[in-house]
Image 1 (tube, one colour):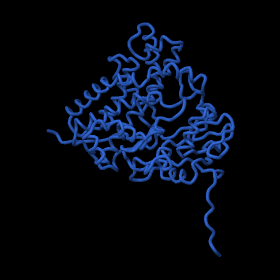
Image 2 (spheres, helix red, strand yellow):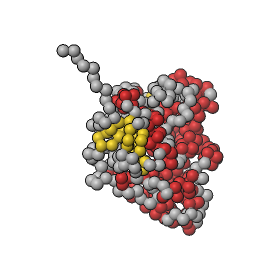
Image 3 (cartoon, helix red, strand yellow):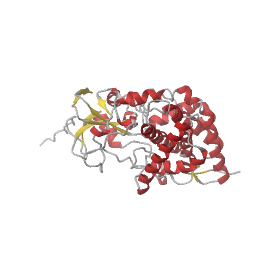
Image 4 (cartoon, one colour):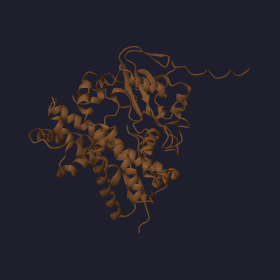
Length: 407
């Protein structure tokens, strides 16, 4: 009997679950199964752990279309999540002030108040402060001597202190604020996480009240002059902390790991610090640490020739979209000389990352400053021993042990 060729998959064949296992020995690559699925079908059905059958978008065009379409919602309370362990009945609605989990027109109100405070020009004015914070922590690394954990010594404190600057956290409170923030953004949920959330909410609520009484030159003080309530301002502060610390810290940590594993590209950056801008954009595309999102259709929508029905949740894989060969030539190669226009590392549409310009400023300072101060910087452990955050919503490294030659 002549064997029959395999039947090609169709969009109606649901995957049993979202592939999450990254290829062994390739810490910078997305799960290989996701890439294979993208190349077969950039939009296909997906079975969720709660029994819902929704969709998985892996191609750049499909992901961008979902993120750009106002008929797809970001609301938590109608969202199905492709992870185990969700509370019965799904997620609760977003708290007032959490603009990541709401739709227009409520979202528009918050976004309008914040957008003007995160312009390219305004964020670039912070460059000198970022440079000073970077230099202070590099000084401390030099005094301590090798080896050091770059995440604890440099990658996490830099964005944490910039968030303190933005929110107007007094210097006397910054160590305590940073400790709670590090627990909150540490990756895996622990018993300490709930305590850190409560402590930060309590602290930020007190800070909001203090800013109303005596405004200073910072974002929270400016926002006290708007119609936002104290509860809304407190939640806005938590959202900015979560969005601005964990993401940038892991980009600096994992980005340094990437550069150390690509010595030719690192040599180019050392020779020309002006290459920092293209290096940062390519790292954003190549690593895509905010790797997965979810949107839910509010009505029937045609995407990539398929009908996504009202109520269907769509998982958008930013990491495979940014490695789509139909959008980027040779996408699995780290190449700062390519055009990265259109990458989706910061999302897209009305929920595109509000603080992306600040993140760019921080990274454009952090990498050249680090490798200029320590030209012989290298890993202090074998690459396979670098601990990866494989169970976190933001991918990265838990620690990055590095060393250098003194003297």
